[in-house]
Image (cartoon, rainbow, N blue to C red; front, side):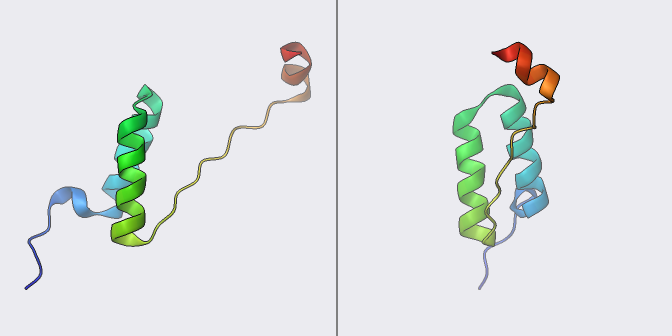
Length: 61
């Protein structure tokens, strides 16, 4: 018999939690949500850094 599902079992909910955790800097929660997505749904989520404009890159040097 399949165990009862929880509202947080949805991949969409896990992604939303992961994104919110990234925004507030909770690395532990980000890692746990990534692990759950991978283990339970076979999803590997990767965030790319925003590319800096040439002007921003020149000022960063």
